[in-house]
Amino acid sequence: MTVLPDDGFSLAAEFPDATHEQWQSLVAGVLRKTGKDVPDTAAESLLSTAFDDGLTARPLYTAADGAYADSSGYPGFAPFVRGGTPAGGAVSGWDVRQRHDRPDPVRTNEAVLADLENGVASIWLSVGAVGVPVSGIDRALAGVYLDLAPVVLDAGAEFAEATRELLRLYEERGVAPEAALGNLGADPLGHAARSGDHSALASHTESAAALAALCHEEYPGLRALTVDALPYHEAGASAAQELGCSLATGVSLLRDLTSAGLSVEAACGQLEFRYAATADQFLTIAKLRAARRVWARVAEACGARSAAGAQRQHAVTSSVMMSRRDPWVNMLRTTVASLAAGVGGADAVTVLPFDHALGLPDAFARRIARNTSTILVEESHVGRVIDPAGGSWYVEQLTDELARAAWAWFQEIERAGGQAAALGSGLVSERIGATWQGRKKQLAKRREPITGVSEFPLLAQAPVERDPVPATPGGGLPKVRRDEDFEALRARSDAHLAETGARPRVFLAAIGPAAAHTARASFAANLFQSGGIEPVHDPVSVDAASAAAAFTASGAQVACVCSSDALYAEHAAAVAEALKSAGARRVYLAGRPGEQRETFERAGVDEFVVAGGDVVAVLTSALDRIGVA
Image (tube, rainbow, N blue to C red; front, side, top):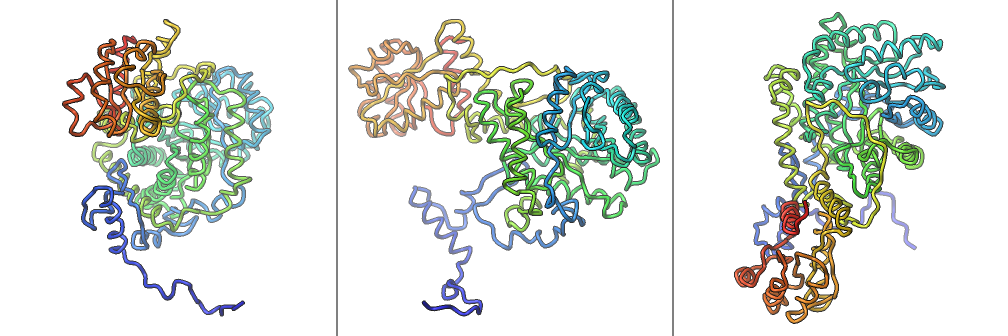
């Protein structure tokens, strides 16, 4: 055996470095084989993915794209991209924070104690109209060591009353002011965004400023205010819009707190920022890193000392991404989201239970939620590396682009008079609404697939039922979900099932052997099931002579022809004619018709279902034709 000397020898040393241009030429060559005649310089753009906010993910990044990494600093130092503290989460990982919405103080207490005994570090308690009544806080926190377990309040308009009750508990239970931990959760602008009620904004802001002064002077372990970006995310905002709104809210609070007598440094110390973490892991990582960068710039511009610009972050797995059908898949979504939140440097992470979209979670769902973070921290050791995504050319570039897009939106809000004015004028709702409408089109076309809903749905799965969530105040920004259009279709199917004992059906008229029709029959079955329409594929194959009888026996009222292009040319027209003669109210054909369109349409094909088409429109029309209310 020959031992190579340790002199920097590389097995690639004798091979020349490939250039970017050579790579582009090779990619273009592959694309030309698929029928796309593109110049070398355009090949890369065809493989790129467009995001909201004008951002684009390219298929290849090089050192030239990671130039910003050199100026992202070190953990614990401005601009805090790599973390708010020098040690990051390397010692113990992030704060595992569980949310509790149940209005019954006794049952909430049982759940809180179970969480704290099994890995949760802090409690996020819903109070008032959206949770435990203020008078029930004492009972809900019975047995909780308040000097060990931080309590974060979410009381909406009742934050002052909830704070008084919590501070009373500290005193009653002998918790020294310097030992009290958590966040009082005052969020006047967030409440106005959710409720649409701006009438009490001035008084709420004054009360919040008074609480901030109290915490600064007497309760060093308590923060008074939350800059909650979830109302914007839950209304359909893009990542940059969510960041920009949080910046504008934070700046507004800095103005209020400094006007009340706090220094800029003290005011910064009273804020905790709350962001959504989604299953788009790289975008979430970049969002949290960009949030720290832009907030550090705000603090610098306000004259704060460098250390005061370290943003404290609470990441919450997105409710927008959660599905009501096949809710078990939400476990996978929240795992990816919480991983991204931890990698992105969040100080606290809340994993919403997989049944969050269905109502109040049960004990099993809460257990899975808290164990998700525990496994990531204790077994996967995600928190033992500071900023593990740092240095990735893609992540650094995305962080930089997202920070710039967020800053531009923040400046637009400031030019409009600030966050309160932008909310009141409708600027925020209009801009976010436009973003969501664009995303809805992508969802309808399944360009953004929803596993278990728009892709691979299970019609026979029994529904999961939970106790209802307390009604939240309306009138402000809406709450959206990715599955909402498909959920409406499935609800129509459920009602039809309850009324008639059967779901609406589509007959799959498959032509030829399985090798010819399986791909398109599977595509069509998946598509129609996403709208609650049950596919009937019996017999496995039909022809012009057998199609009419098979359709009648299926009990369906619409049909979809499925096969290969070659067999379509020979048999599709005759099969479509047979289906129409048997009474099919609508005949679909899976695939693009090409030059045969007019022939197929004359034979009775009403619509062509293709990848990238508007699935929601197709399914809505199909249910209408079947007569489903």
